[in-house]
Image (cartoon, rainbow, N blue to C red):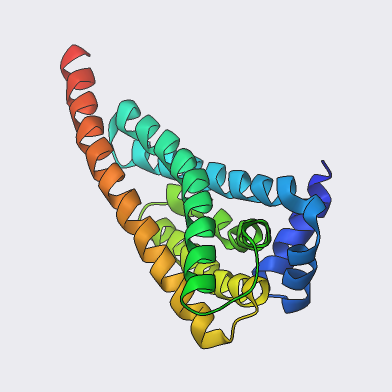
Length: 192
């Protein structure tokens, strides 16, 4: 895999290049590469959260759970978001497109989330990561609009509904793991 080419495409995706999203939509050879973008951004965000967690005194156990959770949910959330978006966009808004087109375009739309690496910086890092997440949401609108051939309003509604469902699922799982991480942190402190 040519990582220079992947990063070049990530930059085009982050620039909200409509022509790029149309190219990706049509190019089935980019399936693995789109997944690689998701993995790169999930790992970057996970590492940022891990280091940030350690710096904020969460302990190694809590920070490690945050790292693994961030990476796994980044990848799982990508698939849920793509399938859900395809369902919403085609059923509710009569969009045309298949899941593969959404997996490719939404995979690249995650590119701005690479800013999650800056979560390791206390205070400001979380804001930079939030900017990356919101930027990725805007890129998701462009991706969905192009992949499903929707107007911008319908693409926004499709993305927001899908994103909210993924957010709720992530929050529920994260809450459950957060309690586990707190327990693990307390356990490791009493043992050390």
